[in-house]
Length: 473
Image: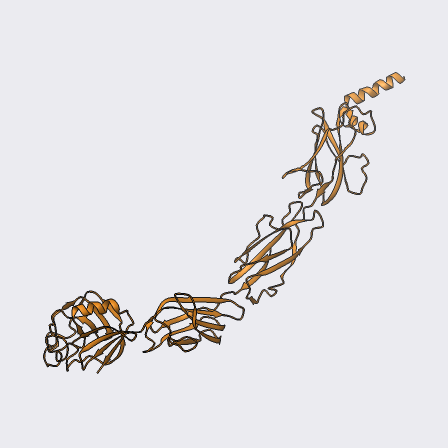
């Protein structure tokens, strides 16, 4: 009777090995399978190292065993709970198990099972950690530029923020500065500090974007802080020079300008170009945007002494109350003491370089009908060669055919020149007194000053644009 009963039990187990046999193994059959040699954890993003963090709730647990075709039992418990040998997941013919876990820290163990029995439990060496919640950034602010609606006038800004993560912890942050209100910080780790100092900011509306990364690989949402920066210094507008070459005995060099923004200080300095030494300094305070100033330099230094002839530089520095400044300069401003004197009564031209006579020559000036104007002028332009075209019609007694000369210097608007006159053979007193058609030996000129060709060549090569021309009675 016992024999029959034992036999029948064997038949039942053999015939229905599946579920019934596995349940009997759990209940405590003899251990006959070798234990797993290695346990692995992976997610859809790859293998997870022991103690690492996964940012996905679905986890693949696997075991490596000595045989193929075995199933797997796993027991997963929150850290702090004991492992009691009761499987929480199983697979029948593959040593892998898919589990779905909430955020937290876990311990787990695994064993293999098959038709011959089960293996001992093998614990995973390390924790299984899940964190699917991205860390937020809060309290984004600036100690240097605290008001997003205000304008600040420094090119440096300090930005700080707060971030926390109750799961895997903060790994670091990404940030970006751009001009896009809806911009975003890229998914790249840039700093581990919740504080950044930005330097070299230019004028503009800027947006600082920052986001946090936790140790599980979760990127938080971008948070943005506006920065309105104005570090543009006051500049110059409407700059005008009265002349670029002058003789201080006959005038000043005037420069006028206005400022584009309010300036606490504007300094105008005149420097000797040969050695960069300061000659004269003018200072103006509290100019508002659009204010105009004119500086008249009389060719003297700070002590009132006339400067030497030569090249000079002029620089204007405009500075605002925040210390931002612009510097604008001009070179090759010429001071000379050259002058050309035309004496109408003597019909003579004398060129002076300071007190030294450079050249003197007889000339012919305008006749009584078309006199040469008196006054102080400047060489305005130089031409070589030049063709004169009559402004009078052929019916006029003042008409002349087109006339070509080699050297001509305009000294007064309206067509008054110093020039050679190859058609003329007589110069000096009496050469302009006869009434008649201008251009003949004794009928004078149309108002120009005629010089012998040799003298005109010398004068043309010596005189610069801006040289003083005095015509005296």
